[in-house]
Length: 469
Image (cartoon, rainbow, N blue to C red; front, side, top):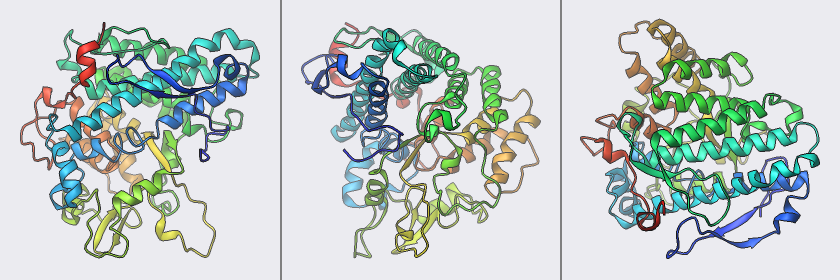
């Protein structure tokens, strides 16, 4: 296994497999270090935690489909009709929300399975850690347990945003299980409100445990690629906004913003070596394979001037529809967008143009952003008690991106919507924005009228048979 930048030796706790004829929770370890050996030391718990982060970087989840892949296609970030023949075959059903097509269902099923496999790894940590509290030094017990609880909440909430309806349309229907135990026992399905309450309970406990987490040297190298105290608070703000609880959403967003541990970039700051704005990440993943995979999907074929990239957006759509012809926006200028063989290529994950640079550069490459400080400003803008306060938070993001401030509060929500599309272009979060508001239309989508049920992913077939039993 290649190196991953989590500050500890990479170690995959469990490689989990699943038989198609068994309940999804009946996961069996394909390879396994005996748990009494793994959880005999502080280092073992660290390695187990890293294993959970590593599994999140797989292509089926945040390494592609839940970032620049499936979710971004559903948010209409791409021009699928103009893509390669292979892309059209696989991505057209996704763009059209045609859940009955087998390729699309396969993406969804793999995401469900992988997410619950990661949850199983986290639950194994949580089932052992309290009994081994005495082996930890400093605040490492609190950090590891807090991370595990927060990661469990993070993944369950993303599953809910995929497989459950938006909060106002939820009702009492049971959509998915919130799994808190490690083993073969089946977990009953929960309603949207129940999943959210369980996630918030995990986050409350994590926040209490991680009070001493300051993203400083005592937290180990680069706490931004592990669940940390500010990611916990930021995730709470995201969940509260999803619920429509503007008071608590604003409160939590303001806590993170006012702490000033993670700040917006200064206006005019160089982006050449930090194209995903890692300095602004509240929580990200790292995989040394991420850029190579993204490069193979976004760049035209080697040596061919006519080969269309797999994920392709027509220049007119990027320029006019998404970035609104705003040439000063740093998210739109080179090197964030770069002309390659006649194509305007989204470049936030790519650094291949710097490969031959004569001066050594420290590149912030291979980061997968999952939660940004900018989102907390958008949450504060939307959830503020008055429009003027909301506008002030939105304008801080606009200034950092090289844009002029907005003066009128007449249509603040429309301006926030534009920002989500620009800020989270090819990151997947834009889809969740549309879903939270149950938007009747996704801009540029071939689906002319979205309904609440259209936003809800179908369960894997085995779940319809075995779920909740």
